[in-house]
Image (cartoon, rainbow, N blue to C red; front, side):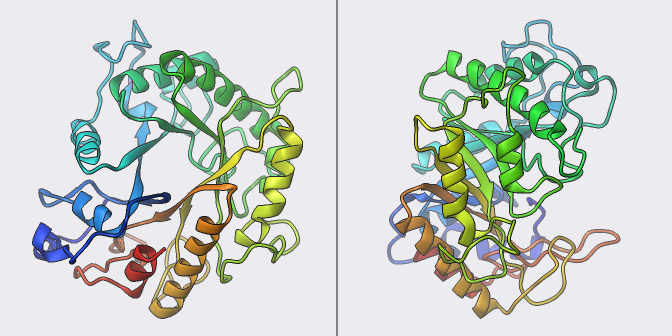
Length: 350
């Protein structure tokens, strides 16, 4: 997400992106993207876009490669907090933009020496880390528990179509909820964090997401990423009869009400993207820049008008250059030369 070509540096100075007036900031609009490019803050761009929430990730495995002796204390010597995130959170605060942090990735000491996508053996270890993160960043109120755990390669165990993964995840989510609320009752815990398809489909994930006693895990907002090649509209129904893009959000909300009947949980739509121009390494589709702008604009109209949507995030601010052995991901609002694509104006007007 944060790889951008150095050729865009001149276009990204504060003067290079300013407009007569920034778009009004809106919590309905979230965005992923770098905090800085070549030493230049990107928050003036996020302000110009009217983004109300800036999103980022923190890897537990990277921050705590060895077990902390005092795991809820962010000052424990085992913790290696990224200095660039400290600066980004401060920059966001000065810009009047909220921050949402996704916590994921288990260190080997917590999951039996397995790869970082494997769940910790004791959910309390993750919960302790979440508490430390909240104390490290006391101004952050939005906490996403694991990124797309229903995606193969992001979370294990995850047998396709089975309850194993959602039930393991439910224990982590519920423990993190209690820990984050103990630090600050104002923390908002975003759980579920499914996406359009998945090794376990979104509605099945929600149905299976139960604790050992049978109750659903605690959460404030339900996270979902409604990637789509359809022009976003509510009421179009599930994609291929089972998958949840924008057309199925009302169905997802209804199932969420079944799961949490005492509260109408809102939807934190952390990510959607529309790749342009050529085949890419992530999605099985792409479109023209103008059609992408149409889709982006329609998505933000859904977010603005549908009260169940808390926010809709776009991924990402910039196109990503090609990686070794793979293609580009031309999903940004700005291309690698610093040119604003039509999607920039569509997001800004959303």
